Length: 69
Image (cartoon, rainbow, N blue to C red):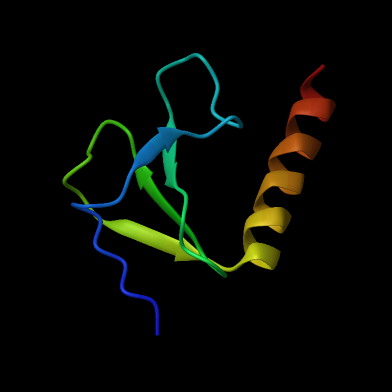
């Protein structure tokens, strides 16, 4: 079991976040999971995704961006 403590994790803005202020932050250093939180609510809830779920999420967003161009 992974001990994810959002208060001690090192967070960074996801490279997939846009520039409009709607950003997510991810924490590195947790093998097998991608912790995610809202950059506007750092003390708020944190979600953890497996690599497959995160990849699917990113691909879906990329598909939406491609359709908007």
